[in-house]
Amino acid sequence: MNRYESFNRVEISRSALRHNLALCRQLAGAGCGIVAMVKADAYGHGMVECARILAAEGVETFGVVEVGEGVCLRRRGIGGEILVLAGTLPETIDALVEYDLTPVLLDGSLLDILAERAARLDRQIRVQLKVDAGMGRLGCPPEEATEILRRIRALPRLRLQGVMAHFPMADDPGSDNTTRVRRRFDAMIRRVAGFLPPDCRLHIANSGGLFYGSGTGLDLVRPGIALYGCPPDGGVHGGGHGTERLRPVMRFVSRVIQVRSHPAGTGLGYGHIFTTSRPTRVAILPAGYEDGYLRSLSNRASVLIRGRRVPVIGRISMNLTMVDVTGLEGVCAGDEVVLLGRQGTEEITADEIASWMGTISYEVLCLLGNLNQRVYVE
Image (cartoon, rainbow, N blue to C red):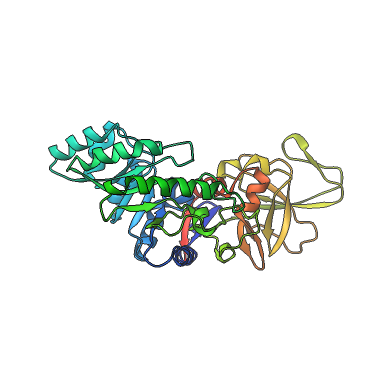
């Protein structure tokens, strides 16, 4: 460890990311491409480095939210197609064209300005259209898709690259909503087929659609959380469909900085929300809510020390967390502590932390990954 580095670090496993990609490809089937979702700094795993790992494995299309993310990828040498998923605004179009990014159009409002900029720069712009087939969020209503696609076809500077939609409930394999949304999307595609070029790519599946079967059979799939090793349903439905083979990519580790002994009846930490009921040995960790280890984990979470689970006790503060190591022999300052991930035969998953926080694995990964020093390991 470099003497200037934090005691806290997030380890990102390259081999786990490659493994999860291979599993997604297997489920997608031959001839179906992958749109690797690297938005939100690759869900806290590091957008640029993850894109490099995935590109080296043959991924040719990446998904980001904003133009700025796409520009960052291009400046760091990432090729292939980069989809800007959350739309664009007129002031970002020049950067979009300069860096050869593909805007996902949400309606027809930008068609004329895109075509004008493309003509002025003597370029052709690839575009995709997002249809709201049931998400109720971004995209055009299915009944408006025909007119928008007709206009795109009439503008020679624009080249339709794909048509997409999104599942709102694919993380619940027992819901029939996903089937209804897929049918609505398929029906819309049949209506607009005459406006689609031969190489237009159709896609709707996120990780849930891919792993639970309702999003396959099209040209592309868009795995996100599954690439990073978490089941789309948060593990609440018992996994299946290959989710048990996913490998977590992120591990969050810290160190013990002090071990103290307290008699019974000692209040610990802010608010004394924990009072010892017996003589207690307490290990103190230099991690807290500044590091994404939220205050809501107080008196609820566990960590791993010397291959054993030990409970978090007392109020988690900005930079410190206390754990009860009574009965765990030999714990001392400098010992590794695993807050997320495996140590020995024990493991704490992102979904488990999410259940303690009252949230989902996506938020856990983004918090821990974006608030701590990241290191990449094999």
